[in-house]
Length: 198
Image (cartoon, rainbow, N blue to C red):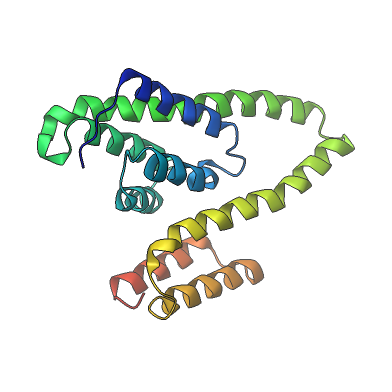
């Protein structure tokens, strides 16, 4: 995929991630539906498969889950640099995409989090602080569900993907009702995928 980006487009990429950073209440992954809308549907800077592959790769790699933002930036830059066929000549544009995307998603939320954490720690006994924390939990859950919905939209018909839905429901119940460590569930899911069962 090859695209052409102007300086205004690069600035739009930065400003979009700057604004999303302040909405990433449950982490950057909760803003994935809007990223899909903007990057894939509206701007056509990356393909649908690049979008889902970036999230899947970042989630399977060790480290913070915000790495998918860097992969979005990399893919946008590679597409702007002439695509994969351009080879190392596209790397400067890819590096610029990574830099702008990561600055955009990290700087506002990090600054706000640092200030809010200091204030919240100093005022942790206030009823309003406790109410805010309890009120944010359903919002974060809803944002995560919407992200899962967007990512599962490419699975095809329900008849073909019933094992994935069954696995999702079973995993959700295990997380909710037991104290089973998440790494066991991730390992089981990876094994089932490797065996080709899901």
